[in-house]
Image (cartoon, rainbow, N blue to C red; front, side, top):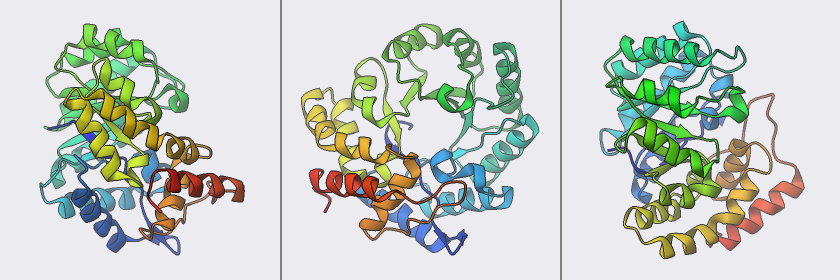
Length: 290
């Protein structure tokens, strides 16, 4: 159920407010382009600047619009366990297929604290949970050994791995087992990630080029790494350009160039610098998107 290319959905805004009609259109577009799942209200969905009510509205809107055609993994993380419980329970209540829970940022729990945090979330609702391990943002790194302990819980089913460490994928296969679902979080290494045990990518670039990303992931799943490499080469300038500044800003600008949504973001993020816009434009041409 959880594999392939899953866009980490942007949250479209219009004049500072949620643009839910555009969000619904994006869901339809992604499904039509072949995306294998949808992941709303992660960092790319500007979760830090959404209110709790907006967060829950976006999740419910995406679940309703997807209507079971592709799985929805609902962003449900917080560095406050009580708050994360609220989001996980809500995701389960509105029919999301899984919850994505980031390692608690800023307060820097120990590995023992991570086990307690995820165990509480596992126990609060009957919904599969993906761990989101992103040391570059949360400062802490969940070790493969800790993840192995959590993988013993029946509803801790996988990880979104943003370490960029290919050896980590193999280590996690040893501690968590080969059925533990490993999804890449770094577009630039997604091809190699699959070669050592991954089964897909929760992708920022897939907001812009969902068909190419789904084709690349399908090639990997079919063990056709030559085709996947050709597609990744076509996409690499776009990966780099989008992440020159915060990835969601680059993705929204690229989407605005394709007429998909506004490039509006919420402070403290700002729109792209002109030189970064030029990089994104050139990468869109390289990928054959404009």
